[in-house]
Length: 539
Image (cartoon, one colour):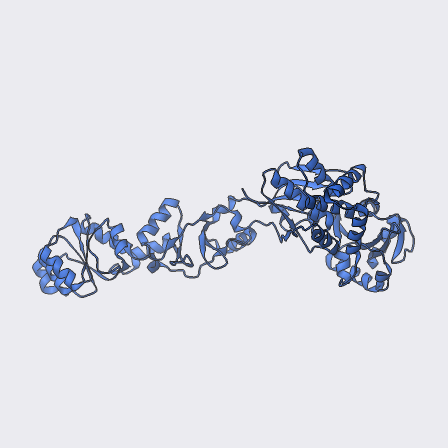
């Protein structure tokens, strides 16, 4: 069963990270195979919660784009370089393929052969040369081992087609001669005395004991086969090592992690039929027939704390979304088939996950209770946010009990850990909790940062405005605003890009609004920011 990735939005906050962790634990208890992931750097607040409850931080997920490993290509379809051409042809015939990757003894890719290459070898190559193994000859010629001296056979093929007297008088046998002969004992005697490399006895011909003794003394290999001389001459060149027919030692090949979209683009130019698939060490994994691209298995994902395409992972349109758990307004995510979508008007996605535990009667362990508690306290500002509901309050009290903490004290320490500006750049503050929204063809972005000391930000106000202007221009955002929320004062200071001033003025009905203006009661992006700004774009 393939893994299911569970993750929140691109700028992970405590709610998105902890809901992924909590939901993954629940799903796994129910028999599924899931793993929590994050799409960006984990902020200080979340790091504090993870460390406090001894939770392993989720690993980073770069994208969910379709890769070759998600395709049903011909895995393990390959052949060793010392196998015979005949076996390679049979392998392609059985699979209905026109190409075959060739590997060395350790499985490393060395080249590609095709049916076209095979035709070239049979029609144009010198069929007199043989470079193969004794075993290949036995296998292809359905032979019987009479005398084996060498494991590898290298030489030139000669057929005893003349009359015996003519052959003995006119044909010079050498050490590298590979002689095909029937029950012509005078020629066999001549061959063993000459010390040829190999004698292939056709038609199950017998060899005299005295000739066999000479062969042993002179190091002559002997094979007996039921095939006729004609049949042997047709097959013997196909016993050659398959590496002898490689014409393409550096064909276009792909690692199994390559994106399918890239493969398609390259194939549109090259128009090849087959591509070898390798791992990062160049070990061959099989062969991709271009028609295999239709047999795909997209990565399976569950989204938490978001349902906006712009907020999700790269390649989300190529993934199989099987479930969405969220507490925000409906966004732009679309699916190709029906999915389980749990959307509740509560203050935190972790509250929904808590509800799922209760519905399925699954016990919540201490560390998972701490994780879910942290997400709720963060998103509801320790239940002070207007987004907090009775369901959030219920969840906080039970989870705090299970986690063994005083939720007010722990919540305050959690928020304090996240509001420290130490070591943070202006960009870090903006992107600490940053979301992008789309209305028709226009985009705007809202960052939110919690602090109990706005003066630290105010002294660098011009620098923050400059950053917002740069982000707006480089991404074509109509508005980029940073809401610096002070939960003690129960409000937010708003900083905005220069060209976005008119939007903020219209949204909050404040003419000539100055940068860093304090908006009393504005603490929730979901209730006090986005619903106020979005109608300006819709008009």
